[in-house]
Image (tube, rainbow, N blue to C red; front, side, top):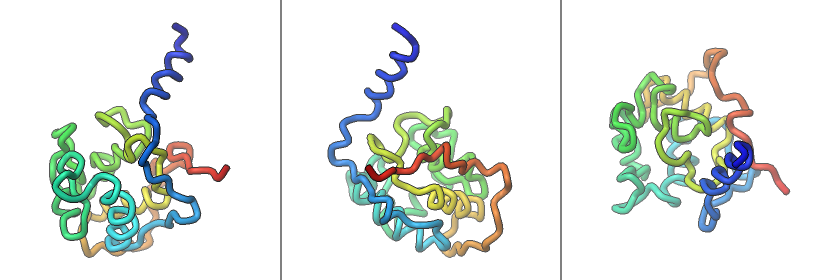
Length: 165
């Protein structure tokens, strides 16, 4: 079988049907979070918890509900790759949460999040999560407005946005 055809077939097999996946309207997607509260409300509460990460049946036992999210993420080993912390304070590039959100991280095991769906976090939201983690991943985080290092890999080519048809 030709390598290109095989790649297309594998990609299609990994995408899934998309049934039940909450597709976000690009107009509803937010900018970069400026506080942890922004992350909790606009990312965890709105998109992660309702889809998979809430209650006793939370995917991988990871509840991102208010009051639990930082306790479940920060300094906790990931279930899929225990050598990586879900969130390693000060080290976004070594945090499994970031590996799960970026499409092409070879260290990730399993599906990119959101599972079976398009990326529904904007580049700005992913950049905000990265800044929160690099600043120590605390619940009292407020963005200081300083720019990330120039080699920050939030290039839009890595995080394709949802286009309106």
